[in-house]
Length: 178
Ligand code: CUA
Image 1 (cartoon, rainbow, N blue to C red):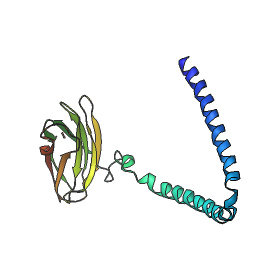
Image 2: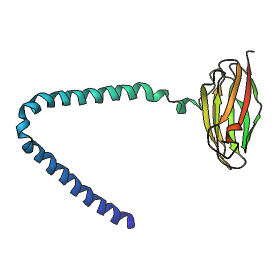
Image 3: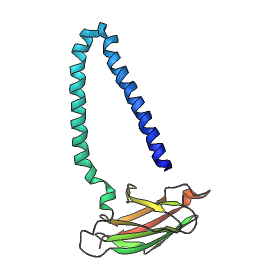
Image 4: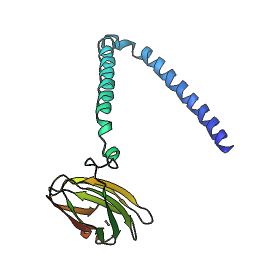
């Protein structure tokens, strides 16, 4: 009932606004009559550039959106071997990660939760490039999969400010070659 009234009022206001835009748009051509030569040369270029921008944006979106990490974070392990469940419990100010040692090619399925406040679970590879992340939330378990591709010491950092020792909230995950 209330929604219907709000909806009706919104439609009327949007109609008024659209009419206003149309009025300004039609008036603009008259007011700019002196700039006829400029308009004649610039507007076709503007239209062409706008068309080009639309084509480029559609192309870029089409080729890149499918590569978002969100899509692949829960995909099946490429090896065909079942993912290793990993319990991750965050608390001020430490990580409890079990197990915390893996082999290259192994897929870890992190089940991330928190005992107290919100934390940010971020996994960094040995070169300190972030490779996966999710929220650690009390009363909720976020599932995050990652397949280890190179050996070394990975690090877990907290990415959400959670109190005075937030910066000390780190952990290590060891990945062996075999
Ligand atoms: Cu935990 Cu910041």
